[in-house]
Amino acid sequence: MSSTTGAVCPHCGWPDGAEPFQVVSRHRTAAGTTVWTRCGCGSLQVRVVDGRGTRIVSRSRPAAAQSSSASR
Image 1: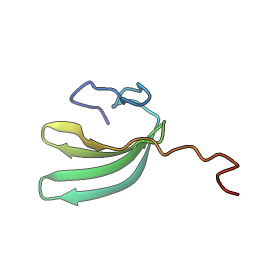
Image 2: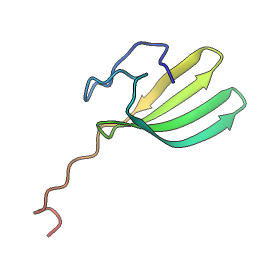
Image 3: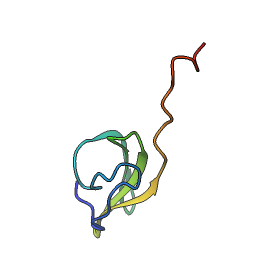
Image 4: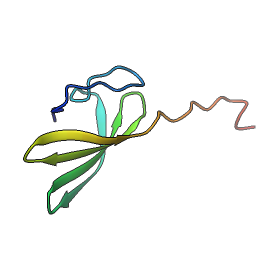
């Protein structure tokens, strides 16, 4: 999947169209496909795939790392 924007993840700098990312879910819509992915840094992304290409339309921050003391 390649990005039409040439942008990178603001959290880790990984190119939006590059691996690694994990496909979390994929949903067909009337306009194309919505794909929820996770960047290598953990940021959740919403990608829209249509006749114009692939665009990231929303992106979360990476999940905060849990320390061992936080779970006590």
